[in-house]
Length: 192
Image (cartoon, rainbow, N blue to C red):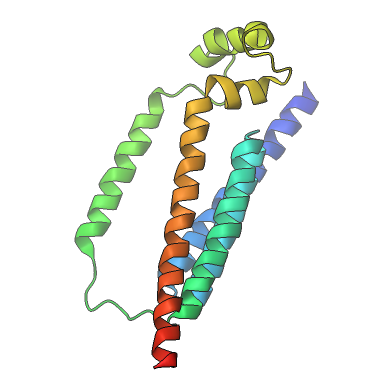
């Protein structure tokens, strides 16, 4: 019993530490004006998020966050920054009270909405009572895949996974077209 309490306390400490790092990074991003520093802080924020997903036993989401959030997004933002001339963000002429109010109301509504969610890992939650036993008992015979996680991602949620991949691919193509078009215009200007 004592080992379980120590484990729970360590897990809570890790969660609180990662959430504190996320909050500190977000506040730092808000106050920075140098775009290079902001991009680097976004990469750090993504890595902290990936760490938090690992702690919550969501390794697939953590891997995606690390690869897309910290990896590809950071590289694409740095490439875009290299194509621009000014690396300093201009200070806004006024304080944005209305957007802050909208964010606070939206955040409050989201927090209020979480009160009905079962606790993390609650064995009596609907997902643990209905969906999980179905996947464990029937995934091999229904999908032919021995790994339950792969069966869920590739078969049961196959259209969802395909949709996510399509969105990421489309965003990447869009960014490449934007960067490529700018490079072609710059090359034409240099040739003229």
